[in-house]
Image 1 (tube, rainbow, N blue to C red):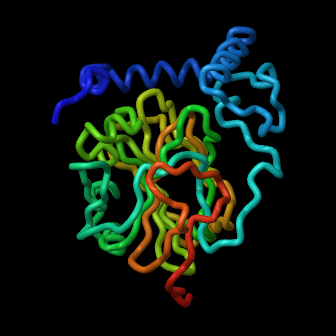
Image 2 (cartoon, rainbow, N blue to C red):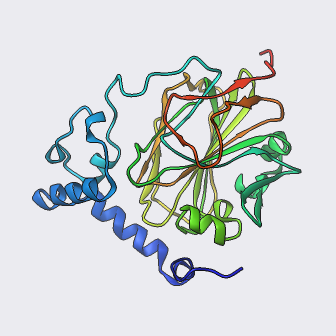
Amino acid sequence: MSRSPAVFAQYLLPKTALTQMAGRLARARGGAATTWAIRRFIARYGVDMAEAPDPDPAHYATFNDFFTRPLRADARPLARADYLSPVDGAISQLGDIRAGQIFQAKGHTYSVQTLLAGDTRLAAPFADGQFATLYLSPRDYHRIHMPCAGRLTQMIHVPGALFSVNPATACAVPGLFARNERVICCFDTARGPLALALVGATIVGSMATVWHGVVNPPRPGRVRRWTYDGQNIELAQGAELGRFLLGSTVIALWPPGALRFDAHWLPGATVRVGQALGAAINLIPP
């Protein structure tokens, strides 16, 4: 498949070095320079600051503080639904997982097992399940919330590349989401297991969760795994799970027959945190 110059350039760029540099700049307390950068970003991407508790760009000491800003308490009411959208963003793809393969874009699939750090046991319940891939653009709110209530079982940090995850790159780079760096959060729910993969990208300085804090950096170059057996970490539906420091993609995985997607959930559609995602089909007793 032919690639655009912009996509081809990503194979040559020092993506990790660029991302580390962007992370340092985003953490810097630059005073007037930081405020200037935030104002430029707001104007460039059309960020709706009216949704923030404090819309004044000068309120934010660092770019990261601005980028991970919370929303007003009334900005995202939760729908009455079994599953809710975990993010603000656009639906890249969604549907059935077929024989362990997830659809990425025309001509491209990748395996559940590869996405989930090569863990055969972890991937097995999702082999013929369902998925949703949600892309967060620079203008979006960048915190991630629970689509349903769940108990945390494990978290995995998988090292990888840092390609852009925009639609053009998804169409051109094979196995993009299973190649990029990612943090996988696994839960037990009333309807079976749930996995949420937070996928990094170029300039995404780090990802953080509410129970761990910043997961990356460090980047030791090996898979890291944390288990939470016996810790009883439970998150309610709609509760914050984590955040991106700069934008990326979330991939949600469900086992077979777990849900029926809402009729408005179609590739290309825009979604917001708390909107109805789908209805449960099978209730698994505890």
